[in-house]
Length: 424
Image (cartoon, rainbow, N blue to C red; front, side):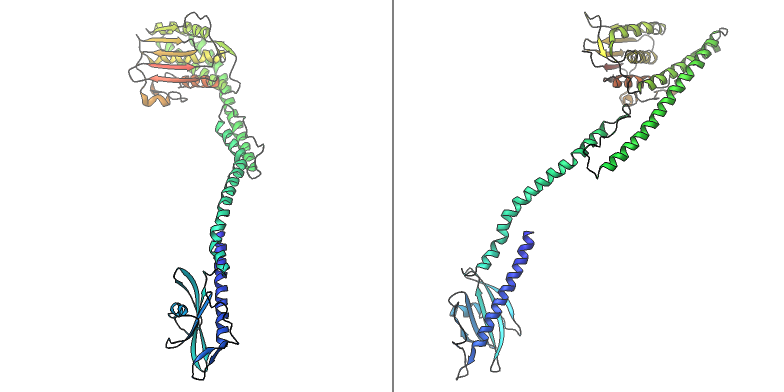
């Protein structure tokens, strides 16, 4: 804006200067008269010489460049080189460090073409408009630049205040997950321009929640309904005569029962109220290790439990049934995927960290990212399960505010480390 205003003022000043020069040249033209010897002079009665001392200077010349009348030798030196044309011609001059505006003004005196060459000393103290215009841009920038900085700061503060609720909504969106499908975006203090978008997003979340709920209910209902037929099937197979086919069918039925049980566990864990109160981690570990010791011995493996010294109980904030399922899946996974003769150690630290470690073949590094995926199995042809065990383990840990970490390398054994929040 200051640059635009400065340009406009400079243009207006140039117009003012041209008008002053042209008017002054006309006054000189009106005062010109011929002498009895054929020369030219200025009539003293019709022209005032005020300003000739320094502000204005003039030269009257003919077509050959001869100087007929001049205000001073300096004026002749300054203006003598101006071009003479058929119309008014304005120009800017500089001499001895001073700035001048000049005009070449054609006139006719007694049928004789002459030119009035007029110069205006803009460096003269009396010419105040040029000083004002010359310093306008600099002075205005001294005021405008700090003002612009202040306005930019105010704009930044206004934009920040305006978008603060939007940033809060962004944080809420980032915190959304499948466990809290009922969560909605807060519309408090949202700008009216953003409010329709937030309302539409909440409506979409409601539809997603309903779809997700229907999926979980279907999985839970299907798993629950399948348990009874599988139990009946197992009982009927028990009554068949002993044979290899009977043993194979019993094994298949029990595997199906295990998969159905895992599906039901997943459905229960996906409920937002899956967390429970305080659970004695030592008691649950003793129970699960005791239950699975026979299976490990039958396969020729060593299953042990390492407890912290001088500790009879170790309370964690987790649902007891969840911890039971988690530990059972970890130990069963170790038994299933390690060969006979290997050792499986369940270690519980005084800080509540649970570690299930084996000295089996280990897991290559490139497969670590797949271990906790639902329905993922390293070897799908072995029919050992549905690939839900480790997904259940991770889901239990996260649903109860904990975490699980895998440490393993090909040929160096495997360790799953579970951290659950301690009670108290």
